[in-house]
Length: 412
Image (tube, rainbow, N blue to C red; front, side):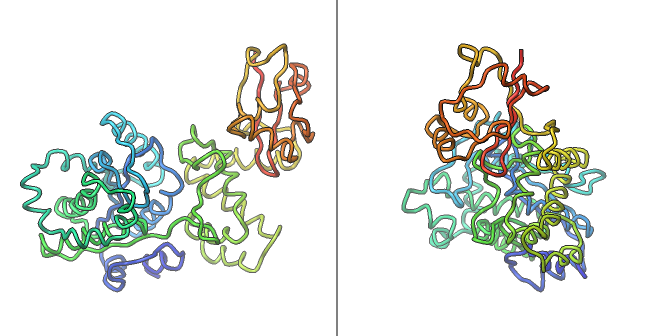
C-alpha cells in the first residue's frame, strides 16, 4: 500500500487538486512539500496536529517536509475562518512564537541531515518591492474570483480590509517561492486553506509552466461536526507549560466513544489492524482504546517518559490511590488565606476551574464540586490550614464534575 492510500485509509485527506496525479506523485516519486504555520501564539495547539501527522507519514515515505513559518504573513493575518481582523503582532512577538514552534516541531518531524526544512517567509516577503510585486504577481489574480472564495465571503459583511485581502496573494507567492528554491510541488493545509492553495497551484502554472498540487487535510472534529481541542479552560496546547502532560493525557482519555477510533486513525501510528479490533466494542469495553489513544498522542507530543507519568498518575487517581504527583497543581500561600481560611469559591477561581465567583457558586450549588472526596453543597464553605495538613502533602484535591481534578498545595 502506498502512502497516499495510507492517508486515505486513515481518513486524513479531505480534498486534492488532482487525485490521480497527487497519488502518483506521493507513491511513485519523491518531492518536497510544505505546510504553513502562522505564528499567532507562542505554542502550537492540537488543531495543528493533523497536518503535522500527515507531514510525518510523508516523511516516513521518503518525501521532504518544509515547515514554513509565517514571519511575513503573520504580520498580516489570515482572514480564513475569522469574523474580525486578527490582532497585529510585533516583529519581536512573531520571532518568539516561531522559536517556540520550531522547538515543538522538532519533536514530531526529523530535521536532521536535511531530512526536513524549516523556512520563514519573512526572508522573501519583507524585502519585496511593492510595485514590482504588483506587476509580476498581483496581475495574476482576479479580484472578482478572490471575493468569491469562502475565506473572504464570510468576512465581507463585517468588513474585509485591503490589508487582509493581500493574504491570499502572499500565500500563493510562498508556494511559488518554495517551488523555485526547493522544488516544492505540494502544499498541505486545512479545508479553510483551499482557495489559498488553489491560488498557489495556478500561480506556479502561470509563472513557471510547472504542475503543482494541493491537499487539504481532515479537520479535527467530533462525531457532531464540532471542532475538538477546546476545554473549559481554553485550547489544548502542545506546550507543557500551557497544557500539562497530565491534562493533555486526560483530554484524549475522555474523548467520546464515537470519536476514539477516528482519533486513533488520524493522530497515531497505531496499525489499522489493531484499531479495527476495537470497531465492534462500545461503552466500558472501549476504555482500552481510549487509554491507548491518550498514551500514544501524549508520547508523540511530550515523550514516552511524560506519557508514562501521565498514564500512571491517571490510573492512580481514578483507582482511588493517593498518588497525585502528576495532577495539575496550583500553589497558594498563607497570604491567600483570610483569618486563617480560604473559601471554596476562591479555591475554584485560583485553580481556574471557574472564571468568576458567580460561576463557582453555580458549580457548588448544582453539586458539581467535591473537595478531598466530599461533595460541597454550601458556597460559603471554607478550609483552614488544618484541612490542608490532614493530607500529608499539605494539599486539597478539587474535583469538578466526573473527570476534572486539580490539586491545591498550601506552601509556607
